[in-house]
Structures are given as C-alpha cells and as structure tokens.
Image (tube, rainbow, N blue to C red; front, side, top):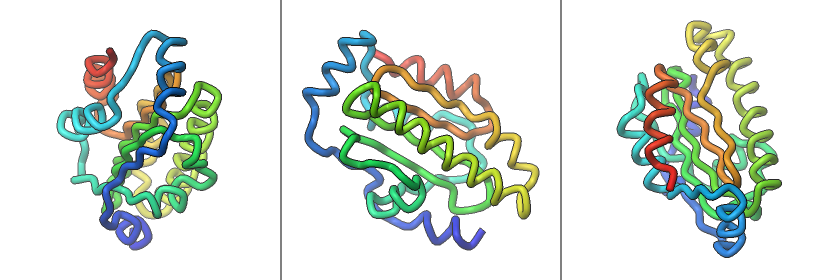
Amino acid sequence: AVSLTACAGGGEGSSSPSGADSSQAGAAQTGKTLDVEATAKALLEGADFDDDLAPLSEKLLTAQYTGMDTDSLVSWKVYISGTASGDELAVFEAKDAEAAQRVKTVTEVRLAGLIEQYRDYAPDKVQKLENPLLVVEGNYVVLCVSNDNAKAQELLDAQWK
C-alpha cells in the first residue's frame, strides 16, 4: 500500500504532445471522437469508486505504465488510488489505432502487475482488477476500474461524439 500511496503524488495528470492532425485521421477511421479531459472528468465524477483518485503526473506515468511511449500519445488523463481500493481511471488518445493497441497492451501489463500486488494485501479487490472496463476504439483507450462497469460504460458511451 505504501508504494501506491507514494505514487499517487501530485501533478497535472495530463499531457498534450503535438500530433493533433494524426488524431483526426483516427477519428475518420472510426467516426467517433472523445474529449479526453471531459471523459476523464465524467468518469471521475460519475463512476462508483471506493476512493478519491489522485492525478498521475507525466513523470510517474511511465513508472506506473511501464513501457508507455508518451511520444505516441496525443493526450491523456490518469487517476490512481492512493489507498488499496484498486480503483483506477485512464483515458488515452494515441496518435493512431496501431499506437492505441500498444497503449492497450501496456495497460494490460499494468493491470496484471496490480493484480499480483493486490493478491497479497487486498485480495478482495482482485476481482475488480481482473474485470475492469477496458475499451479500445480507434485511437482511444479507456480503462476504468470501479465497482460498477455498467455505470462506467454508460458514462463513457455518453462521451463519444
């Protein structure tokens, strides 16, 4: 629990590297777009979390999401639990659909690591981590580890444009 609390430290929790024109190409492929900031806010405020989530700084993103290539991201917002709740929220916009698949893989590795950590000290949270809402659509990857995937999905569905 100490490592999770230490990693929940401050920071803006978002980044917007250049590459907006490539995100438009991804939107053309799927016909759907997502406002990363608005989506993260809607999920953060509306999903059923056990804990108040803290924003993850850019510096800690690659420490927590090992292997994340921030150059392949257009924008992102990540919030993690400061306690042993297992709750987590991540909304990524990648430069293209191929990069989004790589983001999904990194996210799955992150989840696997959390599951292993939680098995020892918070086994009651493992099921939530094993069954998150994880959506990949075009250039976007959304992870929501909460108590109610149906509610989180409903909130996410309302954000697509």
